[in-house]
Image (cartoon, rainbow, N blue to C red):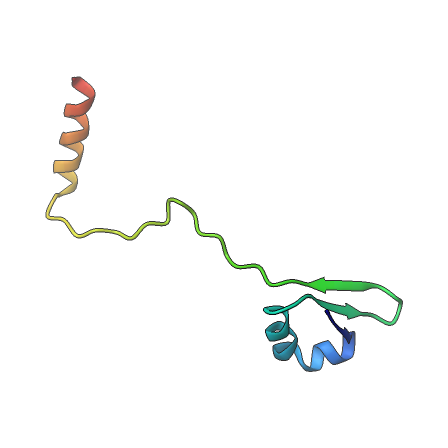
Length: 71
């Protein structure tokens, strides 16, 4: 765990964030408050899927949906 003062962290923010990728970083303020900086990898939504190319038109898709609902 690395500890930086507020002023030091502000001046070296890029370095602080790079360090936080590897380990926890603590930033201390004059008044005694401390803050932790922890790297979090973004979670992707299960609905975030790549699109596909198709020759189907909106009309074709709507017709298929209507047909599936009528069965």
